[in-house]
Length: 116
Length: 110
Image 1 (spheres, each protein chain N blue to C red):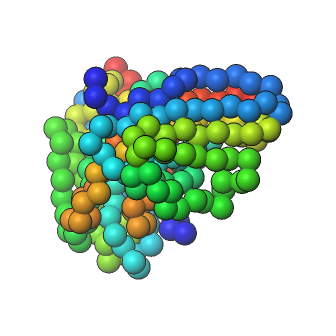
Image 2: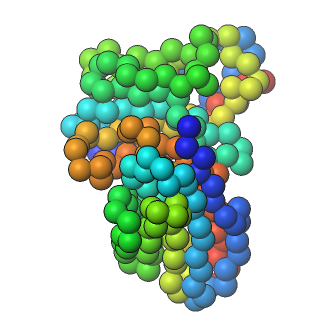
């Protein structure tokens, strides 16, 4: 399967702990996105990378959140000092930049985080 | 920030019936409109990317239309089957990132 993969699929942690999620995009894709989805809402944009450069961060992304894509391939999303409000589904998507506006983002299955 | 809304929030359909639901988005600064199908425990699946006013796209029994001047898109499911049960998300593209609606949850009962 050459789709987007995410690890772990589920994570339960205690408030105050740090957690890190990994996303492996489709191999030829140069763009990588992180979204967060809470119950009853659609996914909300968090940040995105073009190759290894982080081009945009949402105001939703507090100082406790950091994302990296060190070699322009896989990406990690770290949450420090987790809070119960961080409980959500974290989705990763990748795409290949094109200029005809038809750029499709392909999503992974997500990491569901529960903070106790 | 683009305000994307979907209605209804959920709907129940009898197997074999056809259905449709709506996505509305700001018509100014329109870039592209995406539809996804998201089944429980799976990845959201890309259905369509639509950019031109009057666009119609079709994938099997599912089709979508786009009106960029008035800011809405319809998604149609013809002859619904139980495997069509999913949450259908639309998203407006804003310089690459997607602004999603809350989704329409479709339940098809045999």
